[in-house]
Length: 56
Image (cartoon, rainbow, N blue to C red):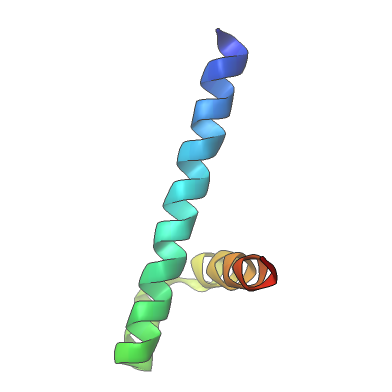
């Protein structure tokens, strides 16, 4: 049960990061100045996710 819950938490965290990455891309396309509100850590994670997604 604990392992299942741990996997669900990891999956939920991954989905949140993917959503943040998609939001960052949307904002960047809309207006680069709005990216300031995301913070450096979120932007770096979003960049990494976008790179991973582009690799397949």
